[in-house]
Image 1 (tube, helix red, strand yellow):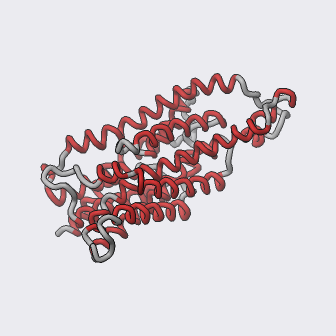
Image 2 (image 1 turned 45 degrees about the horizontal axis):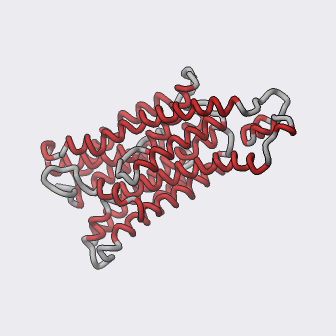
Image 3 (image 1 turned 90 degrees about the horizontal axis):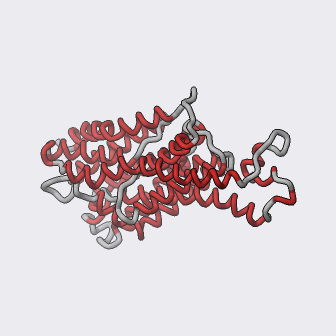
Length: 357
């Protein structure tokens, strides 16, 4: 029972850190394009993330099964001590990254934490590196590249869309009003109906909500997977059939808590320091992210929402041929991609060397 409580607490700490670091990634395009205020976008991200996390009770089983085992050659799952070290190492690194305003991948941190703990517990030769590479690293590395390509294709469609929309000119209207409704600059006779204009705005909000929902759906079962065995092994607390659902539900609530308390810290980094966005480019960046993450989750592909969202924003930048700027977060994002997995592995290895003695 004590081990279940400790493991659950550590999982919730990781989920809290995930919410704090990741909630802004789903709604950054809304804020960066000027469609929504940072506060409004953040609230949308929090609510949609909670909904996605709870939906993982029904639709996140494939990812939960994937992260519950497959890392070792001779064992189906990590023992409690190693699982605790893996979660603590990942949580520690993600919390550090949030404090430093680095948009890192919790998925990468969790995989690094598991590998580091497994090496200490079983030895470097007992980690199933080929399985880890095929099932985890390949999808993670491919997802941002696919996001850049998909976003670039979508932005080709955006060129045709923008050609049909009125352009802002000095004095025609307030720039903030134009970002929310570009048709205010068109002559009254050429404006579409109010219903069409409201649908255009609603589509932006729906796309941001879809990304946040997809993030909750994709991330919650990965973190809950290491807590489920401890729940199942404690029949005095909960039945075997109810364990997975409860683990996912409380993980989703912890993630939401992190998003509420510290989720706005990273929003400016992705909203304004990666790429300059218009309302239409922000819309297509969100659509590309949502399509990839929602499509990968039922298939059990452990893509990183962080990498996909950042890849979509980079796709906007590539399509616009945007040069580097003085305050350029792209270098920070790329560096975070490289250091997350090994850093979390080191964190968890140090913890595992203490708790598994």
